[in-house]
Image (cartoon, rainbow, N blue to C red; front, side):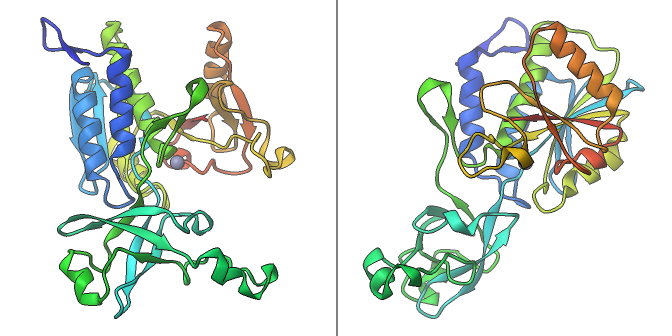
Length: 325
Ligand SMILES: [Zn+2]
């Protein structure tokens, strides 16, 4: 639990850090509707930074040494992929549209939360039972697609649904939250990229707790709308105009079956943060991180990316990516 110091600074133990991560993952923060996660993040990082602000679209920033001429940004994205309510049938079923690159293949039978005007509404992705699906033989299996996936929230008419506060444009997130697996592995919805938001907040905490003095302004940025084209980072880059930016995001564990290491490289959970070579990444900054990791004996894993990195890197120039699995 968080303890109160004699001064204003809160002392956070490892347990409190994990409680923050757990909360952050358990707080839905869909693309374009990130405010609940952002409030939590700002509340946590406030104790470790000198100044905080948000922009009109909801990206959040906290700063150590505001006003210093050289500006460094540590960035993560706050949003998560989700669905939109797109069409409500007269019989009370709901058809959806993607909000970001959400995967329709994993949707059948998943429980979800519809974020309606009167609060959260529980629902489930309906899918025909195996008995009815396979009546024509296995070759007749229908694959889940956006146009055949539907939600059932218990309503039996459009009017029922409207009475729950569910409307066209309401966002839908999966219900799963934070959980722990054996051998120190964590599982949860939206690890992409709550883990990044958590990491950069922890940097702020450790700097403050260890009384580190910085010769530059350090901006911790939790940007909105990454999943639909890096929009939040673009707005923050124009506002802050950083000299250097380090972007944190997740990457894929390529030891997973069906992933081709010849294409995706060799990256495994538990073997250290992943760094990438790419034209968008500043070589000298990358060298600085590589040399520091070597000096401090921190294991890192390497990837290559053909153009930009899939993160906000090209928008926060000059930049360097730190991808972590
Ligand atoms: Zn991401």
